[in-house]
Each structure stands twice: as C-alpha cells, then as structure tokens.
Length: 205
Image (cartoon, rainbow, N blue to C red; front, side, top):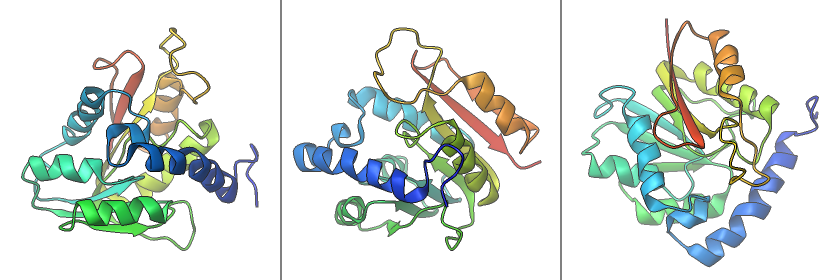
C-alpha cells in the first residue's frame, strides 16, 4: 500500500533503477556511478560516517551500499569487523561482490517488513536524494530499529542556497533533527564539511 506521499517501495525502487542503471553502464566503478561528482567529497562523507566511534571491530550494516565504495574505504582503514552491505539493485550487489570479495553483500530493502538485520552500527551514505521527507523518516526509523549502538547517515541539505543540487531532495537539517529526537535523546549533527551536506549520528540511550 502506498504511503501518504505515494512513494511506496515499488515506486521508489523503480525510480532508483531508472536513475542508477544508466550511471552504472556509463561510469562503472567510479564515484560517478552513485552521483558523487567529486571523489574527494565521496571520501569525506565516508570519513565523517566512520567517525561515529571506533568501528574497526564492530558489526556494521551499510544501507544502500551501491557497488561497495564504503566497504573499500573500510578496508583501507583496516576494518576487521562484521560488515554487510545491502542495496535495492542486484546489479549493484553483483558489482560490489566482485570488487570486494572479503565483504558480504545482499540484495535487500530495509523497509520491507520481511527484512530483518541487526548490527552494532547502521550507516548510509547518499540514499535520500531520490526520495522525500516521509521516505527519509521511515528509513531513519528502520535503521535505528536495526542498530544495537547507533546510526550514522548523511543527506543533501536544504541550507545550501546555491541550487547546485537541482531536482534532488534536500532535507531540512532541523526538521531531520526533530524527527530523530523522537527516536533518541543522544544525537550529533555535523554540517561543517561540505556546504550542501549534513551528517547525523544517533545513539542508543
């Protein structure tokens, strides 16, 4: 059944498929395949996410893992924990498995009621820009329900007034914080690393 905005899981998956498969065919394993125009910005986001804690030996769920760029970043950081990356697109999962054979990847939708994952930390990078605020809130709630210790996610920010993000959804950081406060009293937001991006950490009380 569709939610109040009409963005039901099938509609969102269709939108994701239509957007990313042409990028996958055109750009292969580069940062451009997941809409990050600058490789440095891509890595900056990963560095911020990884700063939630000492995650070198934790269990970690990477939601919307794409072709495994965050897994590659973790490998460079000597990650020795239990990683699993999930994505809506099997084409992305196949590419991630080939690129990072030491990591686990599965095709899954965290919003599917039949999907169940639990990890110390649940993270996502760049998964909200094809959605809307309601989709974002539902996904944040699902990620928090799947974590033992905390959640880290980033989003394009509506505080950037340059218009550089075009038609992509840019979340209001304060509205996002307010929603997160309903799930956890321990929250940290960073809006200091890129003008058009913010990251939120949420911790179990």
